[in-house]
Structures are given as C-alpha cells and as structure tokens.
Image 1 (tube, rainbow, N blue to C red):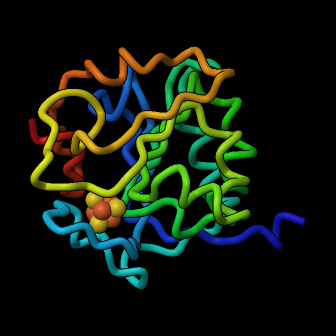
Image 2: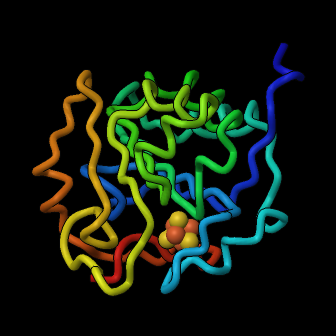
Length: 187
Ligand code: SF4
C-alpha cells in the first residue's frame, strides 16, 4: 500500500520555525508554482522540475520525527511555492500527519473559490486548520500578520482552535536556516 503513495516535489524542510504561524512549527516548503504572481519573492521555487522529489511516505517519516517530543507540541506550516499544484500528494500527506501537530496552516495563491472548483484540491481542505488564500499583489503588500498582501484571505476551519485575529496580528519576521533557507515575512 505504501508503495502506491505519491511523491511530492519540495524545496526544503525547517524543523523549528517561529515565523510561519503561532508557536514553534515545522515548515514544509514545496517546489513549483504555476500562478506566477508579479513581485513574488519565491521565483526560484516556481520551477516544477526543481527542488527534490520525495516520496510522501518518506515525508511522513520525517514529519513524525520533527513533530516534537510529545504529540501536538508543534504546529505545521506548508508553504510555497504552491502546495495545491500537487493536490494528491498534499491530501495524502495531510490525512496522515494532521493529528501529529497542534494545527496545520497552508499558504496558497489560489482563492477559496478556485480551490473548491477542483475536487482534488477541495479534498485537502478538511485536513487544514487555516488557509491563507489568494494571489500575492505587490501593490497591496501587507506589513503585519500572515498575509503577504491585503487582498489575501484567512480561512479558518470551524473545528480549529486557531482564530483569525491571532493570524492577522502575527509579528512579521524572517529566519535564515542552515542550507540557506530563508523563511518568514520581510516586514
Ligand atoms: S502563489 Fe505564492 S509562490 Fe506562487 S507566484 Fe504567487 S506568491 Fe509566488
């Protein structure tokens, strides 16, 4: 069964981050984005052939190790490039790992309406606590919270403990990790 699991193209994983959502979090950054928003600071992640292709079962093992000393002590953030350009891998991963973390936040350039139009993308949504949705608009850049621009929407799953106010008021910072991974928001 595990041999049938899909693979996901990723650009990197950060085991401990404090700039991609509340509390200590694991960050999974995917590779590949078809949306190509003008002003995007992640252009080096656009190429869908870049990064590393990793079997989802391997990612599960890694996230299990990184989830923290006790179940539910860290959150998980999945960002881009564009996670929903790999919806089958995303859904497969989320279904297994969502209970290992305090909450799961996913960043996407698609709007909620666009996600709901596509069955494979919509099937990911029940496994996500909070979505930051919509394309980045450089003319509407946001300097606070988890939104990169003010047009983007924060969508909270009704079963989640997260609240919109916390995510809107989040302090923007960046972190630089081993291997040259820069993450967070340049406020
Ligand atoms: S969706 Fe995100 S990664 Fe893709 S172009 Fe827009 S800002 Fe960049």
